[in-house]
Amino acid sequence: MSFVRRGRPRCVPATIGSAFVLAFILLLLSFQWSDPALHRIPEVRHGGVLATREASRRGLTLQRNETVGIDQSQLPDCEDAGSPGPAADSRAPSSGPIHVSQCQFCAECELEDGSAMLGSGLTWAEMLDAAGPLTAANASFPMRGSARMHLALCPRCAGCSHALRRLDGKVKFGGGEVEPGPEGISQAYTMAATQIGQTRADVAKLHCVPLDRSGTWSPWGCDDAYSSGSPGQLVALGQLSKACATQDMLPRVWTEEVTSILPGSGYVVQGHKAVMTPVARGVSLLSLVTSRGPAAQQEWARIPSDQVIKAATLDLLTGQCDRHAGNVFVDERGRLALIDNDQMLGVWWQGTGCAASSMFLPGTQKFAKHERAVDDWGPEAPATEGAPGPYPLNPLLAFDYRCHLAPGRQGLGTDFPGPLAACMRRLAAPQGAAWAEALGFSAPTAHQLAARAGDLLRHGFEWVLEQSRQASIPHMRYPVPPPCCAVDAGGRCQYVQRR
Image: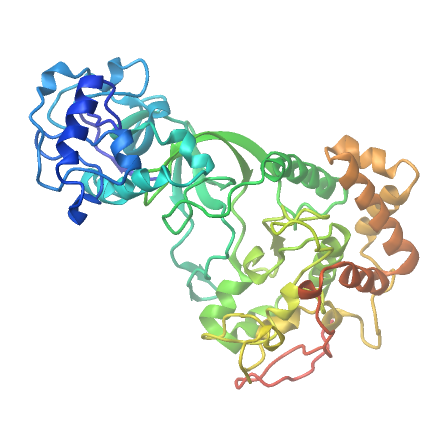
């Protein structure tokens, strides 16, 4: 949580409500239409005012050191404005910060209870430098973010419910430190969130934020059905995990409404339905292999094989399509935790066409992406996707479920872990789909879950895995390679079956 000293807040608006001011500024700017220097950020400098929203739509703004001679005393204070509109510049005093609901970006935000002021990590000037072009560009992007484009750029605001911070920094693990792994391509923000009145931080995942993590308006848009349905499905998965006695591996999930500012940009998220989970134990497998290369296998040795078998079974049962090494954590006792489970049972960020994709399941895309070690042992696209080779093999191949079968076994068949097998029998029973619905799954998802459980019990693990591969679109399935359960320092395979 980033706290800054509280003080007298002031606010600068993104628009001017007065028709006279609007006409005056547009008239002034019309004389310099052809000047490329005008295509700059809207800002306030020593007595000037922000360009109007209409001017921003045309890519126009004042030059950095220009001012407009308007009597600032005639403009109302931010907190007195009934709706977003004109407000005093940084010289004008005010009695309190504007409410966060009236801000598009905010450099600092006061918590609802007034206990602290949260910092965005940017000064007011830095935020203007970053937010100004975004505000102007927003007009040309028919994105969900446009709904806030008329709101103010505020140096200080009030009404935040949570303090957000990035999940980064080195983590102590196994007698050393581990660097965080590279971020995935998900457009959602995953952050540590501390609610008012609490000291514990949980993890909040924010879907459908129009400002991309790269700092530009997202070109991806947002699937309303996905963003509204996913939290409920995840809460239901948490209930299923509890019923199946796998809550040690699948974290508890709940939702909270979050109003805050995003670190690094100050963009306002208001009343956002965030998916919440406890902070995962340990570090991600991706972080370990990226930091240590083949030496990370020393940490693999402490992970019991039944943990890998259980993880593989859960992923196949629930049709996980995003189980890469960044979404699997391990603690120093060798316990695995499976996080970020929102792409399951037909729900996939690319739409349809994925029945299962997991680093535990050979022949699926996420497994294939961990076959080759590229860029300091970090996983990359396999050679079959066009990556030039040869590359050393990746130590993450040791998480192939086949490496953890009992000696002499050629497949898992129906030999599932006891509590999980009992849970699958309940799902496969005549009232299994109704039970899944009662846990919170949608009707289609509940029926898929019941059908998968029945297929696993009747036909076995390998049959369901192959059916899932065949049901996926071509670029989500790959040839099943021989198991490679360890690699040497040069990235060459050393088959070692573990149990």
